[in-house]
Length: 158
Image 1: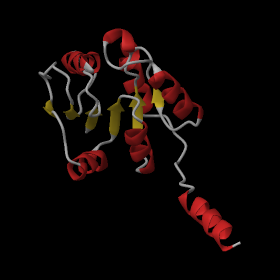
Image 2 (image 1 turned 120 degrees about the vertical axis):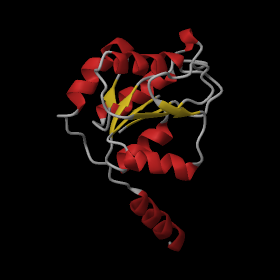
Image 3 (image 1 turned 90 degrees about the vertical axis):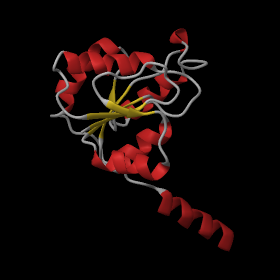
Image 4 (image 1 turned 135 degrees about the vertical axis):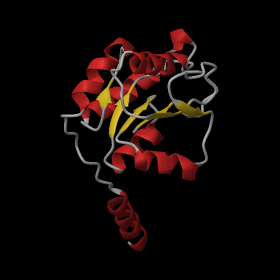
């Protein structure tokens, strides 16, 4: 199953949702698709969707999916890579009214440099990315939370 999420920002991400519909029409995507579309006003034709999800339902969909296609939201990307999910991340762009600036490009570049995700800067390349991602390996996320907590405790105890 492919899980598509555009986050809960006040901005639409119609371009991404339309591209998914187009690729289902073309039979490039044959897996079941489920999307969380946020405030987007484009309503998908070829796949199930909800506007918003509570955290438990969201995490359940994330656990069920084989592939996550998402905007460049740090929280959702980290949540997915912790679960060892393959992620295609594409930035919301200001010129399309999808965000106030283009900071998501830099976020995707950072996650890509760490080899955690598959970046998608141009939605016209999604077909290629979907085909290629099946055979790609990504770096496993290893949390450093325990190390940070240990350092804080050591500092406090000094």
